[in-house]
Every structure is written in C-alpha cells, then in structure tokens.
Amino acid sequence: MTHHRPAAERPGARRIRNRRRALPAALVLAVAAAGTACGSDGPSRYSRTCGVVVDGSGSAAASRTGFDAEAKLRATLQKFLADSKCRKTSFAPITKVSAASKCQVSPLDLDPDGSKTADRERTRATMRAVALSNAVKLLHCAQKQEPGSDVLGGLSRIALARPSGEDASFHVLVVSDFDQADTDFRLGRQDLSTAAGRGRVIDGLLTSHGRPKLSGADLYPVGYGMKYGTDTARYERFDAFWTELLEGRVKAHVHSAYRR
Image (tube, rainbow, N blue to C red; front, side, top):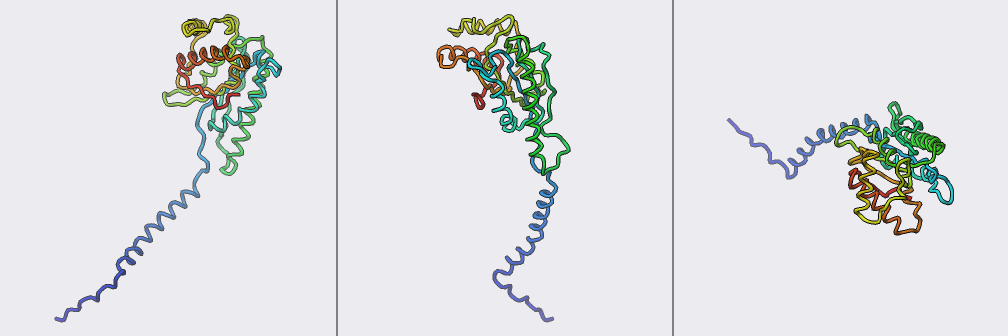
C-alpha cells in the first residue's frame, strides 16, 4: 500500500487558520454588545432620597440684616439636586415651632417613570425647577408665621422623610443661618465661650427639643452663621457649638459645598 505524506504546512498558515476560527466568536460578542447598547434605557435612573429645609424666620429676609433665604435657595437648590442625583425629594420649614408648622409641600419624584430615554435629562431639569418653585412657596408660607427659628425642629421634621436601612443615603440642603431662636431657647443668650459651657447648652437643647434622627446623613448648610459677619470670635463660638451638636452628638456629616 502506498502512503501519501501530507504536504508540509506553510509557515504562518496555522496562525491564519486560528485567527479565522476566532472571528465568529469575536463577531458574536460584538453583536451582543451592540444589542445591549440598543436595548439600553439610556442614563441610569436616580435613586437617592434628598431633603430641603428652608428657614422662614425674620433673619431670612432680603434686608441689610438678613441672609436672604430666597436668593440663596434660588442660587443653590437646583445645583444641589443635580449634583446629588436626587430622586425622591421632601421639604420641611423652619418656623418658631417647626414640628407643628402648617406649612408643607408634597414630596417630588425628580426622575419619574414613563419618560422617554431621549427626554430623561430634560424631564429631570423640569422637575428640579418644580422643586425650586415648591421650596419657594414653602419659604413664603414660613415667613408669614410668627417670627422664630426652631432649626432643630426643622431638622427633626425632615428626618421623617429619611429612607430606612443602614446603607440608605440621605442628602439634605438646609437654607438657614442656624440662629436657633424659638419659644424656649435663644442661641444668642447662651454662654458658648468654653467647651464645657457649650456642652451644657447642647445637653439642655437636645433634652428639651429632641435629637434629629440624622446619624450618617449628609447635611449641606447655606447661609450658615451669616448674622455674625466679620465678628470672628462670635462666629467661632457659634461654629464650635453647631459642629459639636451636628457632628459630635447627632453624628451627621456636615459639608460646606454650597455654603454662601
């Protein structure tokens, strides 16, 4: 029997054949990727819960001695909502008795279902504008109430909108000068000159007004301490008081990104 030895394979032919075999697999992956892109919902949906607190006290007025809460709200709210990728957003007022204030607006969904992919960013921008309009309405209502500034009560009220779960984030914009002044407590009359004195004042305030359930929440003050102007010594005592209360006792995270 005659045996025929196969012709020697040309150099490089095996590599070419292997590449040809690999092409269908690469093509399958490319087609799958294209299909995924075509079936995408576009921009990822927002899921974060946020809060907005507005101070309607006398010091919030657009006057020489006020911090002009409305102007600060208009300058910061929509940027805050966009930066934080807020979806469900709730609102709370600061009045003389914040917890019992009749001023309220309904929570908003800033990334609602049903929007076409191409229009999602436009829908979000529209809803952020609605949020600003509602926040201004809430501010105007608060400004018509009996003068006073229960900051702690406003924080406790927005805490009711916080989502459950240890890992749930909660970002809150607080448009206020933080000058606590209500029926039972006036910050301006307290001795804040020493750490021990501030500690006693904080103990009494939390006992009488309650502790806002904002541990782990991210707070963004706007207008914070503005009444002190260039009085550095008084501002430093004021800042030490609120830093100890909010970060030391309440265990919130306080940021200065929107502070004006």
